[in-house]
Image 1 (tube, chains in turn orange, yellow):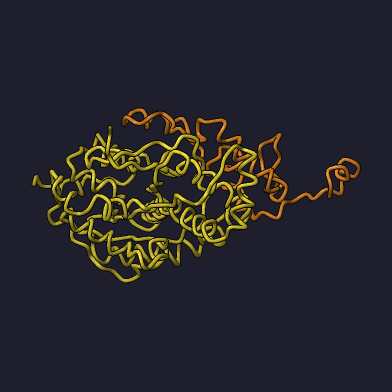
Image 2: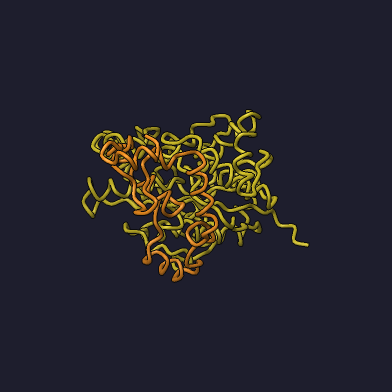
Length: 93
Length: 289
């Protein structure tokens, strides 16, 4: 359905993405963090404790890099394919 | 002028966010063996060679090309300490290097981000860096400690077998032997740890893959399991908590940690206390050179 049709006929919109439930976490994290695993506070503290930077200079702390990954997912329509909700930052399952 | 060999260090996702001792050990090794890891500013997930590739190949190859372009623009070879990342980049590089039409399509999209990838820079596994670029003799000459009587079970991981001509398992073995450790052979050595099948059938993955592998390893009573893949690490450690009693636990370590220990770095330097399964039985087998 196009976006226009979705607005006109909200109850006809697809309720589920074709994404298997077990894939949801990895794909959702890729959209949210630019990485498939979140960098939790515990690990930033542990990184500092052993002498590493609290976060590496990747999408974990580089918003431009994260936005470029998001732009690619939009260019290639991956967001539509997996039903990623940009407002809720969640994937429909 | 600094003439040290330089590599763009690609960390991936699992290592900087939960296996930080691998990152720390790799950085320590570089300092000691006189090569330089340059942080790849703006890197992202490679993306992963299983789910992301299957779900959206077009996004997968573009994100991979974007990461490769960071190293290419900076003029460094890209070095991976994660086998999954290595798999993604070696496949993406091969596809983009051979298929000019695909490369042009990818570059049209990357141009919107101000980026371009010409397939001049590919992927290098850390094993290759240690074995071929640094060399076993230089590593041996820098050792401050060696293992004595350490029995090691190797978990190569599937991806090391993908490029047979590069002989990664053999090179991995040679590095381990240089450290003085003894490799114990076991049945099911080439069996997958089970991670890829987790997404289709977690029960099959743990029961028919990880458990079988762990049982075969346990029969040989090694002092530790050594690997180069963060996904294998997670699975083997998880399997031990599922199927072994605490007194049967076998420490699981990354190659980088063993090398760093033998180069004279301490447990505190590397962050070995973070391991959920204690690795101190391994440290006890170190002797000064």
